[in-house]
Image (cartoon, rainbow, N blue to C red; front, side):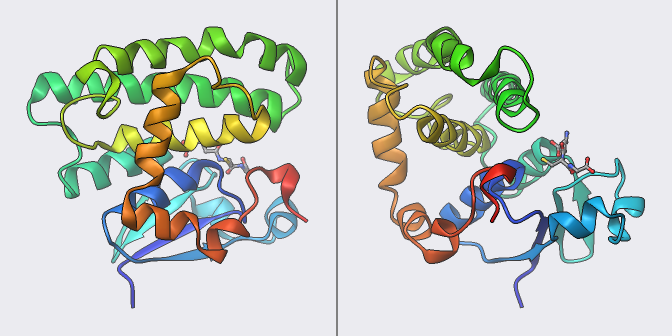
Amino acid sequence: MPGYVITYFPVRGRAEAMRLLLADQGAEWKDDVVPLQKWFAGEVDLKKTAVFGQLPQMKDGEFCLYQSNTILRYLGRKYDLCGSNIKEAAVIDMVNDGVEDLRQKYAGVVYYNREPGPEKYIEELPTHLSPFERLLSQNSKGSGFIAGNKISFADYNFLDMLQNHQHLAPDCLKSFPLMLAYLDRMTSRPKLKTYLESDTRKNCPITLKDVK
Ligand SMILES: N[C@@H](CCC(=O)N[C@@H](CS)C(=O)NCC(=O)O)C(=O)O
């Protein structure tokens, strides 16, 4: 029986970065999938008991957490993925907050049909993505991780964000060689590769709109 249970809708969404982290760290987890229709019809008790009325929820045994970035940070502390000192930890937090900012813009357009709409968002993407190319160039000249000298929880969030954007706009990274090389390095990590190539992952829709 795996110690971790991730409760979420049948999408990658805000649960995927924690799945990437767990897979790469060789940990097992169970996905407890909540059908969207039931949730929005008010038929899921968890909607009332969840701390902020939202998912994902992650349980580590009896310990129950909400808020995707809090969960990532918790797993980061548990698996030593928060840098080697407080300055590295702060840079990792900064990058993760930057990923969160972009995730919110992405989610606004992709999930909630907010302005500026997908076409304009894609047109503006280089402006949103270039800070990450710069961060990579400033860290081991782009040959390592998004921050620090070892993998951190922010790398999994960043990887998920890059893959979501590649799905939305397949050419969006073409003028960002460091991010392309980073994606190659990350997706070649053996345990991550196995997960990324698994049927579970391939069959998991990227957004709520992709749910059949
Ligand atoms: N800040 C929260 C946001 C959670 C969130 O927006 N959850 C959405 C799905 S991604 C949700 O539960 N939507 C259903 C609802 O609000 O009832 C986190 O990072 O976990």
